[in-house]
Image (tube, rainbow, N blue to C red; front, side, top):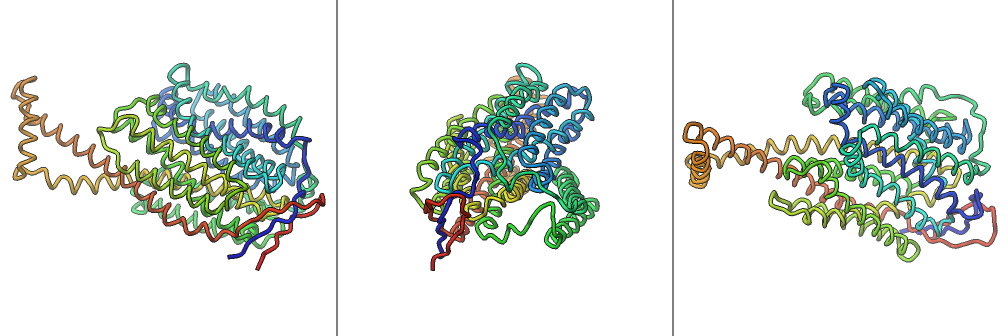
Length: 534
């Protein structure tokens, strides 16, 4: 297995005397954007009620943001060249802030969706640019610590988002989940202007041609994919003709986008970055981790509210300890950053994450809140232990002038993975609950002694309270409701177990990464030249 020795580090041009000033400037912006990606979920019923919209219509509040976000993320490098990276970051933060104010002041669903599109356009570039800045400001041997700090916003914000959003919505109004971004956004603009500076390769440059066709193809396949993911389950997926046609459009435009971006001289997304082995493997893993992260965050509140009878706020509180686990994982990653082979850290994190999913897969309807808290803490720690070294090792073999483009592609993989994972887990719960219901109902026959005894006890209890008239019918309804609960519970448990198996199966892939060793060079302003040891 080959090793990479990183001989030098001062390719980066420091934007300030202390790189932590730049880190603080981008971290506040990152926290605001990532928090907003999850805080709106719990408020959808309130938003729909305000505008007399259906629940399906209200989901466009989420999908419109994701589509706009997904289009901009991989295009970040191209727009950074066109405008200058700092200018593009300032413009993106300003758009996100103004759009947040428009969302909070929306008087119709149409106005809210348009504002969310603008917000998605603004928020899309902030993550990859901020990650590129963090990677450049710190030398490779310190990037593990820097990525641990970066991970605080990326991992912790989505965890507290549902709880904070539920509290704000219940206590004040859903409008405030958007309006709180306004003061944070203007503070971020001031910090970026003061502490972020473009290195020579990130300054405004000449763009000889505009890749309009690439941009259109990217927009089309992401937009149509999102429509399929949102509505496919209701239409029986490929059993519906419109899903088949839409999937064909996605396939054709996706392939056309890949081919065009590989042959054009100035692509809007430079896919040649996948020639780097570490980055290619890291992007695949990031896709899967994004699917697991977003889907587990989606089904846990549903499990707690639908089956356990928790309120939205209470379910958020049960999940929030995952944040403390994430913080513990960040500390562990910072400590191990330069002491242990990062591949072993990622592998350990994946196995711990699989273990937490096994714990979730053993829950039942008689659990206490503590049975939810412990797996969440373990899960949060595992996500940090996986994500921080993964971000470090995936980018360490790239040159700094590739960072902005690479981070855009990297984060697009997580967004698409999250969208597919969330849709897939929703489908799995629906389909598997039907399968379990079919199997369980075989025991609900009058020839089964246990069933007849249970049914008789329930019927007697109901008769003692409301008389014999409808006691038999009501007893059957009670038993059927229990059947639905148990079959749905088994479906949720199956999903967690499937994730556990998937994570264990992916673990050997970690050791395809090339091992990286850091060696400082006293020379300054030299390029990073990886040397492959025989």
